[in-house]
Length: 254
Image 1: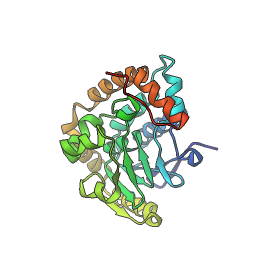
Image 2 (image 1 turned 135 degrees about the vertical axis):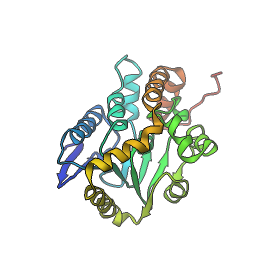
Image 3 (image 1 turned 90 degrees about the vertical axis):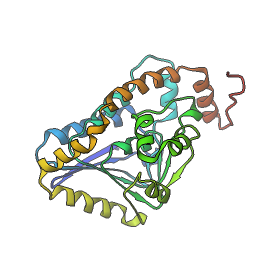
Image 4 (image 1 turned 180 degrees about the vertical axis):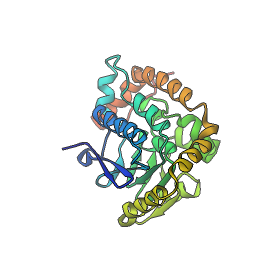
């Protein structure tokens, strides 16, 4: 089964995370396929808008914990790095349709989307610290700008969940719709964007993002720390506890 479905319908390129049996947990191949789709969108003049969503009842559960454990024993570069560079640098407008849970990078990637439509079932969680990790995707920079310092601290430090209505009230998503209406609504928004003058849309997106010049540097800074944290004893305990289905014990760490 293709883990990322990429289909062009008219001027809209749809990207679907398609690993529903694993809650669309992202693999190296999925990162690479999505990165390639972003690059294709920017290089193909016939594509005016990108629409991103997940198959089944989950947007994405983020990275696979077992993949994290494997990477913790090697110095293999994270596959998220080129994906995040392509995501943050995408010139075409990006619309996200969020169904169900968006965990970790599933939430942080949305800060780079231009419009986010959420189903009522959507739930956003960034459990980085509980896994002995730090945030990524420049979320430590973008979330305080998007929702405010204290709210960002609750989301990133405590890993508190954010439901769809709260996300709308805080300005993180544009619209909340019934689950059954999600894809049709998002496609409608994408079609509206695609009908506008394409160069004007791209230039306007660039102007809106002009104040985020520190994003590439923050992504790199976070990834360095993230890689270090993957090899930390705290992360090892968190991953082991997850796999063993027990509560982690961080009492021995200082």
